[in-house]
Structures are given as C-alpha cells and as structure tokens.
Length: 451
Image (cartoon, rainbow, N blue to C red):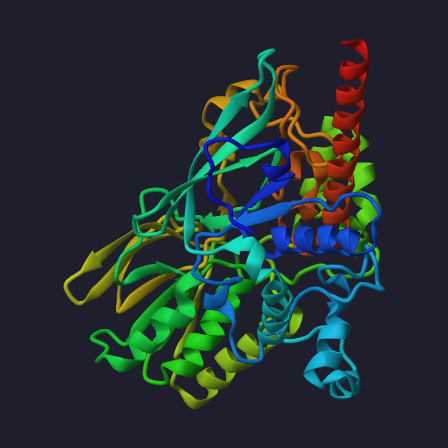
C-alpha cells in the first residue's frame, strides 16, 4: 500500500490515521488496530506510520548487558488490554523457544535487551505499514467545501534530504517520544554527551588514550547510576565521578500500594481529579519514577566505593551536594564547572568526558502542527487540553483528530511517558477512532437524506 500523495484522492484512499513516530507507543497502537482488524466484520481501520530512525529502536544507547526492566513483562504492549493477543511477551518467548527457560528464571523483569528484542519482533509484523528514515516536516489542513477540516496532510522527507511525500489522513497520533534534556547553557559535543549515546560513545573512550583518566557523570537517577556502574567496569584505569545534588542516590518506591499509580484505573481517577489534587499526586509519587534508582544497584555502588577505600585506590568518587554549573569542550577532553551546595565553593574538574544523565523532556506537539495549533485549546497555564481518549480538544472547525502518545502528564498522570499503560491506552485510542468513524458515517448518511 503506497503512502505517496496522489493528485485526486477518493475518501477510500485516505488513511484513518497516520502515526508520527514508531516507538513503543505507536507500535502498541498498531497492534491494537491489527487485533481489531483481524476479527471485526466492519471495514478495517487503515493506519500507517512515519519514523525518522532507519529501523525500530528504543533507547539503544542504554541496552546495557544485564540491565533489567523496571516494569513487569505483563506490562508489555498488549496483555493488560487483551492477554489473548498474538503479540504478548509470552507469545514472543514461545516463538523464540525460550518460554520454559524464562519461567525457570522466576522473575517478572526481563533484561532490557530481551524486551527490546520483543519490541523488534512485534515491529517486524508492521514493516509494510511503516516508512522508516523519514522526518515529518509539516502538517497542514485540508478544508472541506464548508470550511470544516476533516482531513490533514502530513508532509515528510527522507532523512538527510531527498524525496518529499504527502500523506492524507483523518487523524494523526503524535508519538515522537522524548528528547534529551541538557542543563541550561550546556551544549552536547564530542566529549560532552547525554547517556542516550552511552553504548556508542563508551567504546570510543576505551579505544583512545585517556589524558585525565577521569569521567564525570552528572545526575542522580537510574540512568546516571547505570552509567556510573557501566563506565567503572568498562574503563578500569579511569576515575568515575558521580556528581549529585543530593547526598546520594535515592531508592525508587516500587512498593505494591505506591505502584497503584501505574494502574490503568489510576488514569481515570487522575483525569477526573481537580487541578490541585493532580499536582499533589504528581509531587507525592515522583519518587516512583523520577531521579530514583533501583535499590540493589545503589547497594552495589556503595559496596564498590567502600571496598576501594579499603584497598586505597578510589576510582568511584561520589561528589554529593554538588551542582554542575557549566561544561565545555577542551583540547584534551572536557571541563566540568561545579559548585558545592553546602559550602558554595566552586571548582573545576578536567575530564576526558562529561556524561549528562539529566533526563528527557517532551517536544511540544504544536511545533509540528503548524497552523493547526491555532485550533487547539489550552488551559490557564498554556498547556494543551486533552480529552480522556487522548485526543487534543480543538475548536469546532477542526474535526480531524490529534491524538497524543505522551506529553499528557498534566491531564492523564505519571504514566504518560511510561510503558505501564501503553496496552490500555492504545485500545482507548483505537476505540476512539472507531467511534469517530461511525459518527462520520452517520453525519454523511444524514446529510444525504437531507439533500
């Protein structure tokens, strides 16, 4: 099925949805649609996807050997929506011939590498519906004769320049994922980089002579702790400096009651809650996900630091209550400017590399929407208003649906950017597409009867 624009399209040539980005969120949506299309008597939903990467990939830079998922395998792409789906993690294990072996592990937490392979296994089923290595450069309205906008055109071009294509659709799903967050005033470079690139950059460090034999890792979350542990093992001659604004790493609260905030039902409760309650819940439960570390890894790093003190060769240094104020490239590596939060003393640290484990942030989807952004409703704080079905609320002239796969923490809660509710959310978006399609059919029949 070609996605290329044709000069004269019939309604049958228009997609029901174009997904922008093909990470786990839109992959889960593709699966939900496929599960419906396989069994439904009604016409299938027609969906296609555009992805800037050359192939499917999810946090490839952090697929560290032995690193495990922080969510249960039961929170895969489908199980909480339909455990009978052919796309469950257990079905993947069965096809790979590892189901009995995984059961014998007695764990709910597969390695990150294995879960990524599961994602790739699912994504391979949709190769004919994804155009990889394409960047979306614009979205523009297609006004009907009465001025209403029921369709939009998504313009994309090949990564690196080249062919430009236009794809017409009745709905879009924005699943562009997260982008690295850098400290204010700090720019990434050859020797200052984000943990997103850890597995790409670490071998380059190991292959070259280290002038300072020192790496600084900035941050206090899971990625920071994993980067410290990984680099400490990968660069046995280097000093690894963990720069934290607190006294040490804080453990994640993964207790059963606290984990209820990741339940699908919690999204309903959060969405219906008043604004002050939403803010309170986000603050109270931040330690389930943000700037926290797995308890076992904390203990492992502490044991390592202690044993190095015993033998008198301290390669793992924890610079606590310290903030990075600037970082810059130098002729021999990078320089980190630090300030103690307790004494106010400032000093510099010359390093071979400064690694920024400073988290991620969402890209405002309005940057993609162009003039359609003017039709999107916002709240008192300028944030997009989003309906329960994850569709952006718009003014009356825009009927084309804009669904958000992330960036909705202010409306749908802490799971907005996490894997925990992807299976359920994809089903909600699919059902919304079906409901809206049936509504269009009803309007069309009513209009014909009236005429």
